[in-house]
Image (cartoon, rainbow, N blue to C red; front, side):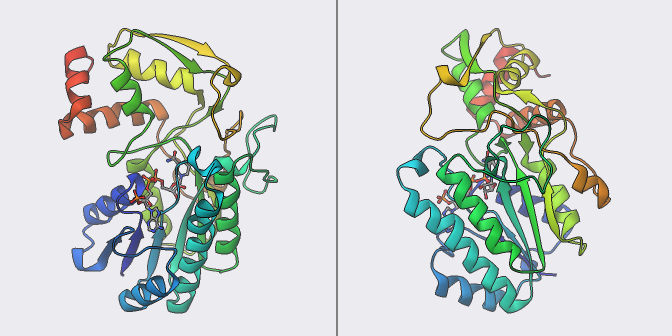
Length: 299
Ligand SMILES: NC(=O)c1ccc[n+]([C@@H]2O[C@H](COP(=O)([O-])OP(=O)(O)OC[C@H]3O[C@@H](n4cnc5c(N)ncnc54)[C@H](OP(=O)(O)O)[C@@H]3O)[C@@H](O)[C@H]2O)c1
C-alpha cells in the first residue's frame, strides 16, 4: 500500500507519517508532501505527482488554516481549501485512491442546543468554515472518501493553544480566556491512529473525531496550567470581550455516533491527551519543556 500525505509540514500530516512508520509501513511507501513538493492549487503539479506516485490512499491535510487571516484573503483561502481539494479529489479519482479529507467544526454555526450529528445542517460563520465546507462537497462527489471533522487541534509539529498558554505563563500570572465557546480538543497523535485504522476499511462517509469530553477554552487553559503546577488565575470571559476577525461557533460539540456505528474506537479523553502531549513537549526539549520542568508539574 502506498500513502500520500499532504500538509506534512503541519501538525496532523506530520503525525500521520509517524503513525504509518510506527506500523512498519516502509519509508518507500510513504510520500509526505508539502507546498514545496506539490502546491495543491497547481492542478498540473497535483495530477502529475499523484499519477507518478499512484497511491492507494491520500491523506489530504493541507489547508489554509489561518482562520482570522482568511477574512481578508477570502479568494486565496478558497483557492487552497476548495480548488486545492478539488484537484486532490480529481487526482484520487484518476488513480482510484481512497481519500481522507480533514474538515472542521467551523462548518456549523454553533446555535444548536445539543451535540452536532454528521447530517445536521451546516451554516459556516467564517470564510475558513465556508471554504472547508466547499472542500467537503468536492470530496463527497467521489465515492471512496472519508470526511473527518475535527476541532481545536494540537500536535508537536506546529503552533497551538497549549504552546501559547505555556509561553504566556512566562510573563503573566493571570489571563482572560473565552468561556462561552464549548467544544473538544484534538490531539494529532490520537487522531492519526484512528485515520490509519479507517483507511484499512471501506467504511466511507462523514465522521466527527476529536478527543472525548467537552470543555470551554477557559477550562482547557485551566487544565493546562493546573496539571503543570503553573500558578495562573484564569478569568472566564465572554466571546464578546475577545473580538476576533472570524466569528467562531459557540457550540462546537460534535457527536461521535458515526464512529460508534462503524466500529471505530473513540479517541481518549482530552485531559489524557493534554498530559501525553506535555510529555512529548518535554521529550522534544524545546522552549515549552523548560517551562514545564521549571514548574515541576511533570516528573
Ligand atoms: N488546526 C486546527 O485547529 C484545525 C481545526 C479543525 C480542522 N483542521 C483541519 O485539519 C487539517 C490539518 O490541520 P493542521 O493544524 O495540521 O494544519 P497546519 O499545521 O496549518 O498545516 C497545514 C499545512 O498545509 C500546507 N499548505 C498550505 N497551503 C498549501 C498549498 N497550497 N499546497 C500544499 N500545502 C499547503 C501548509 O504549508 P505552509 O505552512 O508552508 O503554509 C501546512 O504545512 C487542515 O485541513 C485543517 O483545515 C484544523
